[in-house]
Image (cartoon, rainbow, N blue to C red; front, side, top):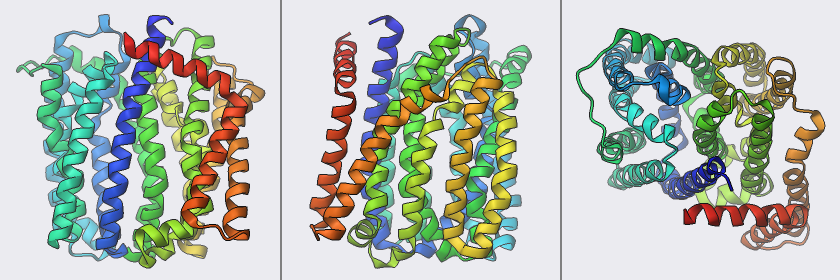
Length: 482
């Protein structure tokens, strides 16, 4: 196995380990918080994060992506120091704007006075995230995902524990607010220790232009991405209620959190690799199709469980007060299954040095999605919003296929793309039929049905691609020994 493949395999192992720990712990925290809190409280935080999240996107400026994408010989120490101090100044300005300008506007928009104090607290992470940005970019560029996994896992476990303690203490909505802030703050000393890098008072105009020139398109794309991904929160909170938004965000969070975490895992590993291979279209295509295949392979059984057993999952784990989330959970699970087919597009397009194309594509998709979402919410509430998200994901798959074959120098045949996702889809259909039949028709216990469905999925995958999986496991073992 060549050195590049070892780096990819090791990277996927450690970032995969990071995702398993983070998601396992996050699910436990979400389960407990859902028992202690109410949909209206989740909805309030959802309202606040629409605004704070948008500012957080602007906060990055695409600097981290620029540092990772550029080749090592193009970077000097001045680039890292310039990126650090630019981020500090910019984030301070943004925090003042959101605390004294955006928070009052959010109160007027939603007519929720608590947002005036909630938004500045949640936004504290804006001040500290640039500090972590340069350190994480250095580790990502070196593909040292073991250290990133340690930092992220440690900070998330500590912040989750703080949130849980606050909720048990009776802090209510503030337990959710401090959860997001604490993880970023805890990560600061851990990242500095992991890299051994310390900033110096250096700011270079040429270095700034180098990283900002790439970053401006990346930021534009991130803004478009954020608007697409959060316009539903904004509209539901405005047109419906905090309770409706809480139910919607709960279903969205259960499903899309797994997808977004896996996207972060895969993209963190593949982005630097795509950058190295940006002039080798055949290698890019092969890597991309493998990523699509394994993305789907990992996430589909989780979404399959949410789709088949949404009602017993909600009722047994979270309680009857979340009943409004049951149908949206089913729809969102299918939406995520389609999204997995294009989950690595961002890393691929940016790795090829085309953030401008990605921004244009996102703006085009938003022009389709937003009117569809408004109509869905107006006529059918959160169910209409969920259906709009599903249709948007299906359209994204079609657009991605067109992009590869017509706008990028990567020819991905439709048959090649179908082959990459065929086995996970077949296994999912088999798992659904078996799980649904034994639970709904034979009356099996929910937990037994869930286990049988998962075993059915795994057995189907083993029949369809067992030899390939054996090879991958062998390569993973070899990579870990190095």
